[in-house]
Image (tube, rainbow, N blue to C red; front, side, top):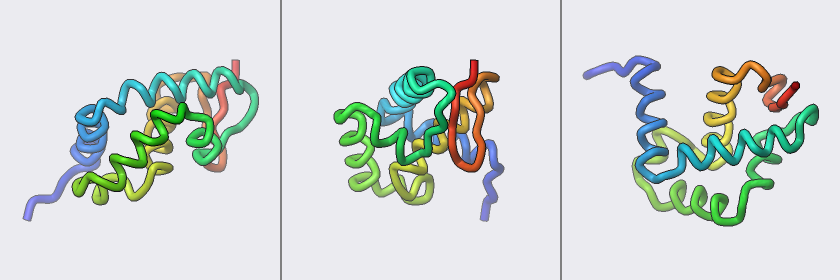
Length: 105
């Protein structure tokens, strides 16, 4: 049995989202939402609720209809958290505190 490293697992998540044309869209929308609500902490649920209706529907469809989703993401909020955590890692003005995200200028 082959054990995957954390990087392999992370790359699988990114590849999965890219395959469904969600990765770039989610990065942009979540980044824009955090800037729009700067200095206000947003939970993953609040971020999901503020996404465009198309993107929410697309996320729900992918979660429910793709059999390979479950080992990677159990629900839409896990996808939101994954993307928000990537933004926290890459952009110094975005922070995470107690599972809430904020853009601080």
